[in-house]
Length: 230
Image (cartoon, rainbow, N blue to C red):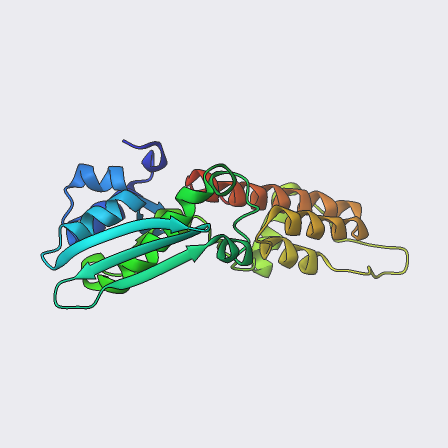
């Protein structure tokens, strides 16, 4: 059993059911499907394998020119389709500066992104809306926390309401929390954390917990292992 499925029977069910729709056997599904934020995704090589098994698949060619990945794919009775993903695209998307695969293997990551676009454009019926895990790992769930969730954490930590000398603070706990939750890069996360210095000591304790959870979430995009929320 892959580590990311350990103790997660719901994710196992999702992976096996999705695999059945794609023509994969149960063990193949567990090896090739990642469930990220509750959404089943196929690793890049498996995504290509599913498309190659389609009766209308004709050919695929993957090349790179001037730091631009090029994927040419052909479906029977349709014109050749070309998808590209350049280093400039990676920079604009905030991917080039990410720690992990985008710095260590940028050529491979550009290849997978171009492949993902091409396969999903030409064979949506074969893939049934499933995306490439390497691509989804670059996305972040930016759902802001509810007031009840914040209060729940406060109760868990035994915190009291903030009180300042004049009864107000220049920035609220909710504002800092929102900035942390919407951070897409570590630099944005650190910038949001700097605002926490304007809060009271009790709220700083709470922000440290939220900051820690968000940092784990950012790192989970690289490892592909879902983080555990509070």
